[in-house]
Length: 273
Image (cartoon, rainbow, N blue to C red; front, side, top):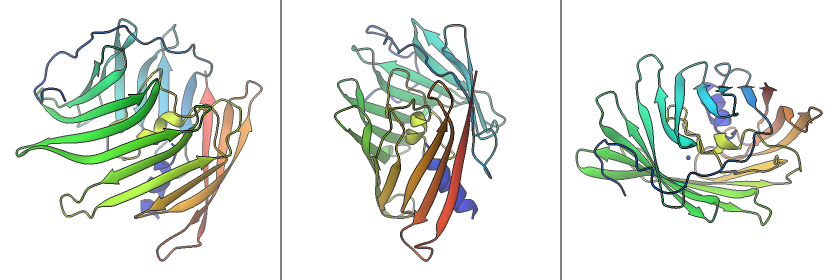
């Protein structure tokens, strides 16, 4: 059951030198939209609680974010109004995530830097205008650079996420796998958990992309097809008077493997400042 819990959590819910150095801060800083919902916590039953926790400065910028009951705790620092670094301060891990920007002011690369100052992973991001179009995760190994995960994103005309296609090549004894998550039946309320869609590996780092909006509203249905664990789920939301979600309940049906047809009730609860 624990395997399913971590998989279910993932649905809530992203070419420079391999050596360390100062991030490139060229280009104008992006102008994030004004905060409309200062998310405090996301709580998911039967998972480490709170699953996500946020703290902000007086301008509404995230200063601290933690994941999985402080399995990861990041201090977020800024330069010229945009994220420069996310520094993990959790026990046993002192990684720093360095942000590199392109000339348009969009996040181009995020470097994972270990406690010894060595870059061991890079996320390379691509865009279609203001929309995030892809993420390539590169692991830096003795033999060079290995791509171990790619994500491609497509959108409806209104800007809501249509699909995420994820591919993992055969590496380290793991088989090649591809999945497609399809979203539909969006409402016109405020979405606050879209950021988690690109944080679908429990032990990978959380990255924040201010100014990038994957989902404007909240999807009523999600369908995963492809390899591995597949499902469809219908969501029901409860909102406060400001159209912020207070809860997200799902009736999930497993669609493959020995548990095909099994139904699981899932839920997330949201709180705000």
